[in-house]
Image 1 (cartoon, rainbow, N blue to C red):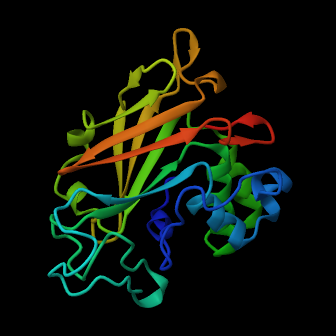
Image 2: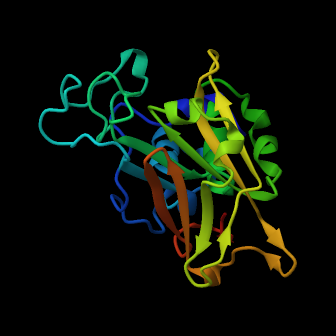
Image 3: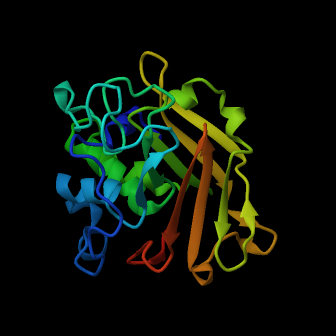
Length: 245
């Protein structure tokens, strides 16, 4: 399921802020099978769901208000529906290290997310409908957290191994920090990093690393002079079968 199309998860309108929707039984992942999800349903899951978090203004030294010196502050759309400048990223020179970055953090190994990814491929003609079920049947076997942004230049300049000690998961209850076992880059046809997938162990000697009793899982990743920091509420990261990580 690690497809290059993930570079298009971020839309021109930007990623919705956390808490924009009240998640309940009327959400697509609770109300109907994924084979019936529409493009709108898929977009909600991949951008504004309990598994998806938008993290604005990471790092940088430029204020998000007033004159940035980079040619303006208003978000702009790029041709062909590709991502434009998201809130917190100002002007055309996004690779400027002084510019705050916006990242999308997605709990990539969740079955709901994998179903949305497969359904999106069907809706966009990249995957035959009769292959959709097969593509989501196999569980990854570990926890996978995907980080993506319009500007991934910090990742472009560093090898995958450089982020092994820069990220971790932490359960709110136990405070135990879980380090990644692997960092994997997805790249476009030009070799530029579009996403970084952080792999974490799903099991330990006593069973699953995380359970519903943990209530909240925090994700941290140091990038340049900033930190991507967000949390996942395990009472909400559930599908019709229960906890979905």
